[in-house]
Amino acid sequence: MSDIAIVPAPRQLTVDEGRWITADPVADAVRDVVENLDPNEYRIDISADGARLTAGSEDALRYAETTYAQLVESAEPAADGKVAVPLAHVEDAPRFGWRGMMLDVARHFMPKEFVLRIIDVLALHRLNVLHFHLTDDQGWRVEIEAYPRLTEVGAWRAETMVGKMSHGQQEFEYDGTPHGGFYTKDDLREIVAYAADRGITVVPEIDLPGHMQAAIAAYPELGNHPDRQLTVRQYWGISDDVLNVNDATVEFVKTVLREVLEIFPSPYIHLGGDECPSVQWAESEAAQKRQAELGLDEPGQLQGWFTAQVAEVLAEEGRRLVGWDEMVETDCPKDAVIMAWRSAQRGEVAAKAGHEVVMAPCESVYFDYYQGDPATEPLAIGGNIPLEKVYDFEVIPAALSDQEKALIVGTQCQIWTEYMEGPEQVGYMLLPRLSAFAERAWGSPKVSYDEFLARLRPHLARIEALGLNYRPLD
Image (cartoon, helix red, strand yellow):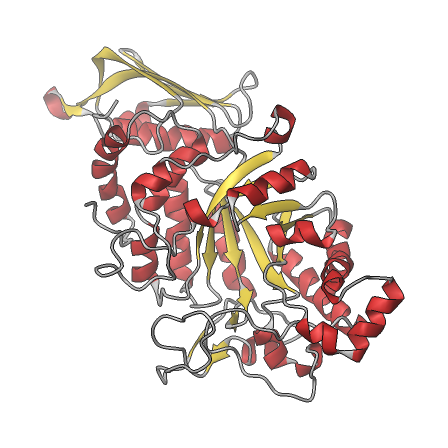
């Protein structure tokens, strides 16, 4: 198969001797949505009489067309300006329903046009979720009409730290350059529609109750020290400035979420839940009073209560809560989908607790990690995830029972942009690791890394055609 550069590889592909001779293989192919195939399943049959694409849904037909287009690229010239398309049979369906990528636009804002190109590259790889990390301590990127200061103030920081942040660092050098930006509701609706046309769901993330310094800078009354004016955070790491647990703040978040739901029709809404220090709740009289009223043993348990309150808005609209794996420790709703990021073992814990799980472990699919020698690579947060390690990623932990394995609904790679200032840096860190990830997300047969590289090398031309940067192969 290495002479046919299909990425991700179909789960079953046979190539016969012979060719179909045609002037226009794209226009001449027959396409049908049929009832006897699963909604995610498709077939491609190329005989001497022509090509037929059948699928169980319009989305699956898109997958068929993507695979077929890559197969057609293997066609050879024939007489009279025609081409000779290889005879082949494909039976294919994804292993997982959630095949995603997370793009962090809070740390560094990314232009709308680049987000659209990211959607194109997801579609090229038959991925179906764009997880859009829209808010964090360093920036708020979504227009909320009820609270205009979220973007008037929260979308902009005066400057950004220079160099790599080390653990415990307190003093920083700054670049003196303002940074920011946000997406209007119309921008986001355009992104959502563009993705939907390509079979991709955009899942927004409003990270809470931690990672909220940009929002508190805009509205100090949301914080635990309302008399203190914060700035949008100018360096990385975890801020102690988290939302307070007052009724007014719960209503603030509910109002924000209602506007978010108007923009994003996704059945899933991500509410973050990671890295939420409770130090300010432990010091706050109001938080201590709330803790006592609820009969909680420690301040950190307020996070579960807060999340449950604001998640009521999602339940009212029939949406499902998604959260990072810390949520398992906060008595989160039982139907919450857990995104296991701290390790694959955290995914095991979530599945054993009965949650559906999206595997996103930092040791395998965090693409802000180095992919080569740090001495010669662009600045990154740390770690080392070369292309071959991504290709070898096993999505489902072997230690799970069959029942628990069934709760692993998918997988996702992450692009955190602390050290990626714009599209060129994101492309370099994302690609072609995304291509290897797509093989594991789709469930492509794992043959050999060399066979994958043989298909990947010509595939890079498709990435170039989208106008995206990528890291050259070694």
